[in-house]
Image (cartoon, rainbow, N blue to C red; front, top):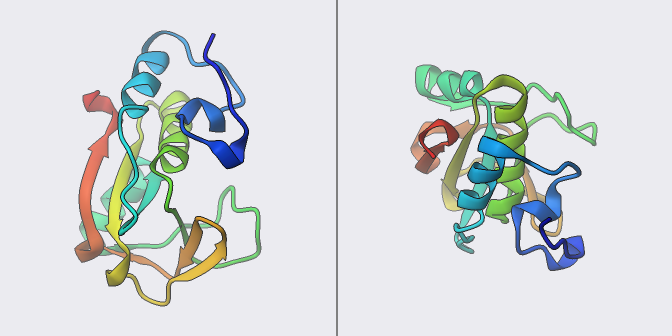
Length: 137
């Protein structure tokens, strides 16, 4: 069993999970734990469908499913592991999950909604600097 820490001391994807991954999901979680955050970047976990919209239209906006606030826009995190958690849950539920790394200086109307969490009207394709498809892990 993995050791969990308090959320404000999060250093592992396991700190954000309320379920214990097993098998392939545990392998992916362990691989994601090897990545670290870069303070000049933001991260978003998304589905393949959302990523395909980004590639097709040049931008993507969250439809709001799962948002905890009444905010229109796409959520991003300064914590890679938090974004990875969303991608891993999507992988568990739908067998796909992607994490995009985003240059925050290229996002329109970026707003901090609480420490480490941001919202923007949309994520433009040109702001994405790296893509990690969980199927490749």
